[in-house]
Image 1 (tube, rainbow, N blue to C red):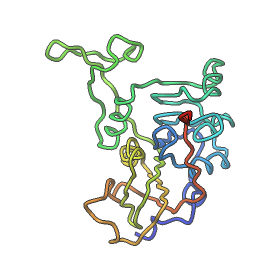
Image 2 (image 1 turned 135 degrees about the vertical axis):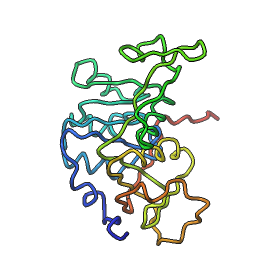
Image 3 (image 1 turned 30 degrees about the vertical axis):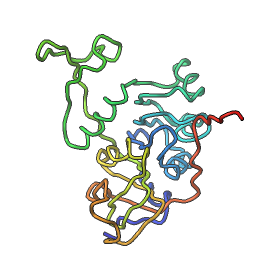
Length: 232
């Protein structure tokens, strides 16, 4: 079990290679694995396929990898906060697979559960369904969506123990639990790393069986994507 615990992101990501598919947790800028993303940036790995709810902003989150042209393809549901993303896509420098948000979450969950695909009515009759199998159930059309599995999954949790049992806080729980199940190797960074047995079993969101590597992160910025301030 102690083999799961790493000193930092650099030691935990030692075998990430060019051309890999990475599933990255987080919702907007909430609950993103900041230390892992910064390390990937410094490693300068290239031709990555990144599966994430969003693409960060221009200088933060996955936006840092876009700045250095490290990402070949994004599979995302929302990219509206990143002007660089738009520029790269329009210039043909970035491939994009748009996926409805609920469908993306389910594709990641399915990948983690060993489910090859599922049928959903979401996206039927739109560009999302082009080139995909359509079937009719009970008089309604459904599109086949494939499960997603990554070479690595990068996850941010609030608290974890040394076996990899995880607790998430609030919005960070939207995509991180699914991402944690869908990596061939799942790397987790936590704000607080505790001994095995210290977490209340009833409060654990992700069991440690899904986690291969864990480390205590540091220096979290926890930026707010769009700050709205009420006028006096």
